[in-house]
Image (tube, rainbow over all chains, first blue to last red):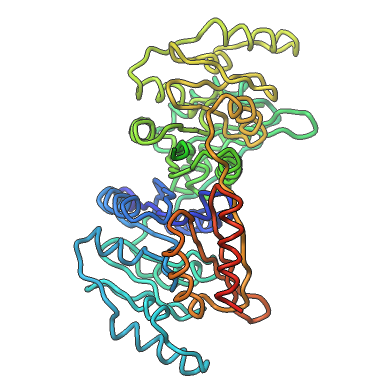
Length: 239
Length: 239
């Protein structure tokens, strides 16, 4: 059975303007690979409602799971929750369960749950809340879309609470053969190797060290025994 | 006149598996912002021909300029050039101008221009070559799509040679007001400020330092005088 597929949607002008360097994509990619969920596509869009809605619709219908980051804070540019609701044609308003979480939190810290903060309790009907142990304001899951914060510490914490609930596949294992030869010198035998192992994914990544061109050949698959056998065959091609 | 728009397509399994952290998106974003070209969307797809072709078609028709990175080396998993040709319905083969560049390079270094390396001379009909001062194998521009290498040093060098040829707009300037208040405390007045300045883009980015919540308010626009006046008005809202 093939592994479940996933896509990610990163939402935020600050990434596209170059102000902030996204960190969540790389983290999510590693976490999904470990669990045998294949991340197939990532999109980054700005804080623009039509762009967000269109991307959510496309990714939600194209992949088993969708993970979003960004745009769920209290300020006017935080429009993700409303866009997710629009993409699913679902009603959205301040929800009692989310409001109760925020009320308790701000009561404890002696701050006011004002209108802006209350925006963070806007949750679409039918969505399940995602726990936020860092700063309380919850994310949510609607359909196959998991809506999380863009702040990396919060994104990680939210992801940790939903990953165990998802069905994974066979974790993708990888083996690397490091060759001190340029890609142009190994490409012929490597293409043959890839043809001989149609069940494995074979990638080549060039590097340069002390003026010498080298290649890391990365072979990926879910069966450790098959992978080890293949690596022996690969090494024999480059004595 | 609105600024020209741009999109980026990052191609490579190694990014989506979490093996490699992409660096080119952040670099391109900064370079385009400086030149007044608005990066509106980024997509990351795997080394999969249908996914690459579909993304190229969508981005090429949706934005003024498209920048791709990755998949133009000599190995079997380097399929970008052929996918670009397919997306445009254009013939592709080894082209004499690109072959001559490679032949001269490998003659100088005493290496063989073998079949694998010759794959890097596959250029679609009608495309203009993009100079590669780092490792010679050229990128190319076809229509509004600029096809570049994924290796960051090569990506940067290729981008440097094409950016001066593109029509930019008014560079997007930004000013930041750093407030030691959480987003929930500033969101109300900030939304009002954004409404009062419809020509400016107003974003808020939370941070935490020594247990204190703060917010960086970033205001962007292309008119320095207008921007400075707006920042004075913004500061007055948060005495």
